[in-house]
Length: 333
Image (cartoon, rainbow, N blue to C red; front, top):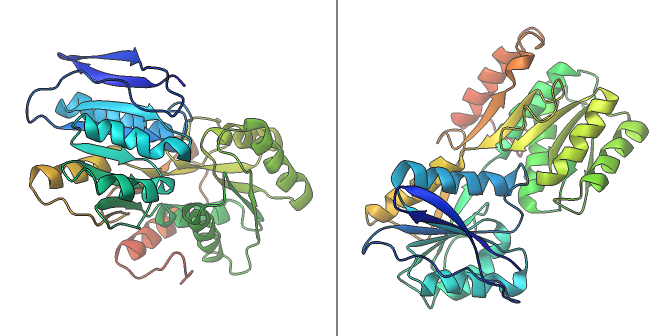
């Protein structure tokens, strides 16, 4: 499987194809200056997915551009190669290995025990410990706000909630959206489905069409990465709304996406790097939420004149309530 690596060469960037390995693994790195921070990223999906994985990759590129940190990445979709992919970077002396997804936790703990000089971080998880830190992205705080906005746009509902695969973090975003809608109308009806894939555009489109045609949904929340393209296509064809997730997807389907629940991945990376540079890195869960600014909602400027009266006022009030700890978005109160 070809590995694509991003390397620092002088003041610029160059892309180099990695070696072919049946079990995965990173290409041999260029030598970095002694003591220089070096960051590696493992991601389970393609860096062009328009969502979770592209977000991580773009943050890695931006990290290099703004700080000069040497960075590389490996597409690592198979659990059979998780440990070898991590081990490759640790053996090469990387300062930090970021494993982008909760599916990496178990493997990271096994590898971290043998490489105490390398810091391991798993994103999208609160399950820290045993030498592995995590970044707990509480995206559901933002999706609650999207649910509120969805119910303001379509007071009678119903809403469709579509996840790529059935992960706890994905369910949390879906449940929080439903609770946000119910904060506007307590009886707001929602229907949930999973595509079973993060990149099957056709299957995602069919899932959305099914909810639209059989359930009559008028607004959709999706957390599907690359497969979201199919959902936006179905929403555009039926003239229903669909919210973005993870990255700013507002421009992916004009007139369809009112807002996106987003993660500032670059800020999350910087949080971890600062702790390393200060000698305060811990194998703990670093929290990314509305309060930290790592999680937010990006409103689509094209909808500026389309929001119902008081919609944005109630949105801001709810956001302040979540930050102050007065609203539990998962409990719905």
